[in-house]
View 1 (tube, rainbow, N blue to C red):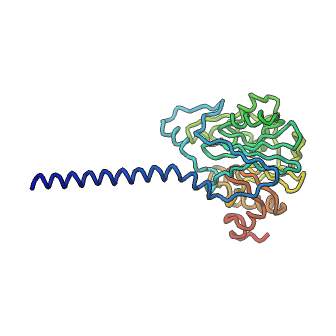
View 2 (tube, rainbow, N blue to C red):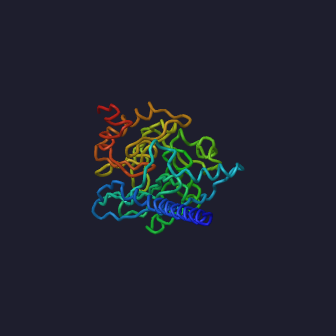
View 3 (cartoon, rainbow, N blue to C red):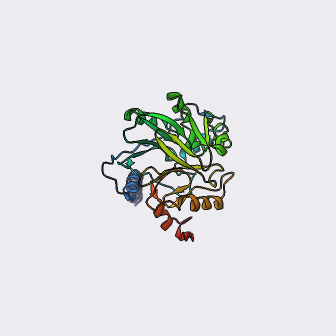
Length: 323
């Protein structure tokens, strides 16, 4: 009987081990396939004729040239790299795998930097050899490679605001193109050289950018690379955040940083943040643009003014907007 009991016990242990291995295998397979399923489930915008599909590759971001790591515990550094859900917006966004452009005149290509899925943009007029680079992030080599592959030269490096994920690539681009001025809103310029203001210190990474070569203010027009861009200051996510509006063709384009996202808005719980000011700025300066205006945000897919007026739960009609 004892031998029979031992045999039954061994059989049960073996069955438990097999079941455990099956469950473990299912979990591993699910984790491996989930990102692909999420990407397939994302809605895509219809591409204009002649649009070339592309996506900047993903991966753990190396520190950009010029970034300085503070002497903080390893957990602080690793937690910085683990924060793949953007802390800069209320919602998590997955970038669309498209290169989008208006084939008549304006080319806009997002280059995504990990770990925050931050969108840098290379913008240029069709036929021009010069471009603008907006918000170079934590993987500047991707941007540099793209610019070189297109045979372009930056006429300016432009920051919509001074948070670390939007300025981390400034130094690398300035090293490659030292004559390209670094441009930022006048009320945000101090963020470039202050790790506390640009929030990098809080992640254990004291990131310092070169100082601004030029500042812009609300109501001005910024001109470079043959482009004329109207400047609007929309504080709330950061105190001196600016957006740039191109009205040189149809549709208009907004290089918007972390103000308005597809279905969301920028966080307002950072120092100097204000939901009321952000909402007011969006309503006053963005929602008054034509509905087909394309909005290129700092995280996630592009959207349109009309879509956000209709459906944005924070600032659109679901939130009481009546414009």
